[in-house]
Image (tube, rainbow, N blue to C red; front, side, top):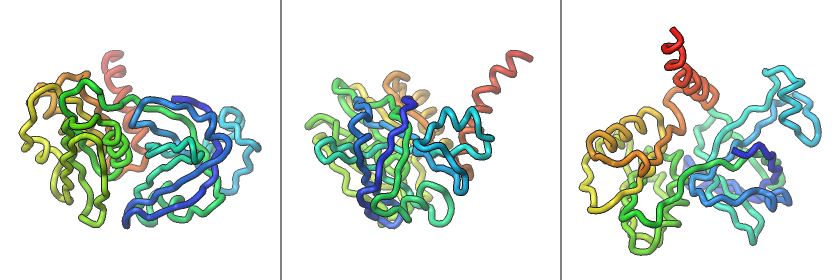
Amino acid sequence: MSRRLTSLRVVRTEWLNPRMIRVVAGGADLAGFPDTGHTDRYVKIVFPRPGVAYPVPLDLDLVRRTFPRSHWPLTRTYTVRAIDRAAGTMTIDFVYHGDSGLAGRWAAAAGTGDPLLLLGPGGAYAPRADADWHLLVGDEAAIPAIAAALERIPARVPATVIIQVDGPQEHQDLRSPGEARITWLHRPDQLLDAVAGLEFPPGAVHAFVHGEAGAVKQVRRHLLAERGVARDALSISGYWRLGRDEDGFRQDKAAERAAPEAATAG
């Protein structure tokens, strides 16, 4: 992921539904933001801590060398929904959790001219042009990446989409040149049950499964063990974990990566 800091300003905001806020931002820095072919293109949004005097312009490497860790800015990871080079804007959709959370509260309060600092982009997935059909599975956190992927699926190519949200008020109008069949699950309906109940079309599938880590792990096991999907035909990642904020989730993942090394060393 690029360490380049991009500095933008909010152009406008829009509530897509009661739990999704769209922030459109722009600025001269966007001209230097790298283009990638990934539809899961993501950035780390930088949130300076209130009351801390940072260098201007913000130099994160300098901050991490010279400031105590408790003063480092916080970051939150979000998918870039779209970039409009002609208009000079970037669109990011935020899930809103009310008074909890950091980024959603910021998006709800954001106004025209507010700064938006971000690192990136990263990303690894785009729908394969040679796939016979596509499977896109996720929850509300994955909707921006799923929506971007749908727009890149070729005409007449089938796409089966399963998205879990709280209720019908969170549905979005998602469009694709392909032949998309979209199923909206309302909690407590489970992603695993919905995927296990699918009749797979013939041919090679390219699958994208992102969302809550526990649910993603279940679907991954099903696709590999019971459906025989090749590993290189899967893009699977947990975006978040139930009961943990992003900082806690990062700590969990770091501990999981270290655990096999510790066992080997012992």
